[in-house]
Amino acid sequence: MHTPCLSIEVRRSRRSGPHAKILALVGVFGKKRFAISATAGRPYASEIKLAEPLLKRLQPAPGSYILGDKGFDCIRLLELIKKKKCRPVIAIKESSRMAVRDPLRMLSRKNVANPRLYNRRTLIEGLFGNIKQKLSSHVRVFKLQIAQLFSLLRLALFNMSVLIHLEKTGLAWVMVFEQR
Image (cartoon, rainbow, N blue to C red; front, side):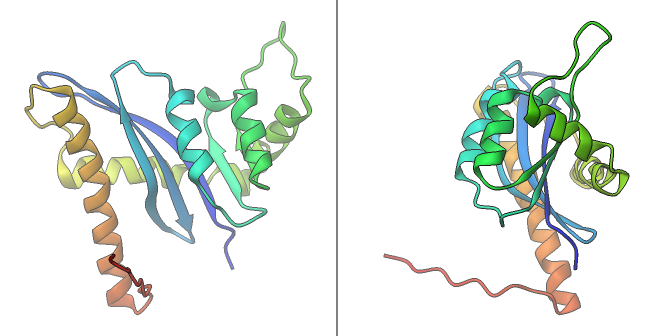
């Protein structure tokens, strides 16, 4: 049984006009990857400010790992991950002049040292590469909101292709929607 991992990832979608910053929480189970939640922001929006609302709404299984790169080593995010009863696997910024002292940052650095955990980020990086390869990385649009919408739709289309693949292999999930 594989431990579910979530990754925080940022990609910029460049276009002839505006470009959007996309942040996605990506689930990995075995080698299957899918976007759990995503948001789009302005081109130079803070990744931390985009990630916080997504993490607050997230309901992961206790003990899950949350992966991220050095851009997400903020104490607020690490505390939020701990509050969700998850374990951070986020690379920590450090230098010879700046030692890591916070216990949460030390825990995260220890988890990053485990290659079995941190190397799963390559699956997440590959997800964005697959999306760009299959759905192109450039679409000519002239408004920021349309650029954001197109970027989020790419994640939705990728999720649909994952569901179709799962259905073909007999691993499809049954989902029930109640309409009121």
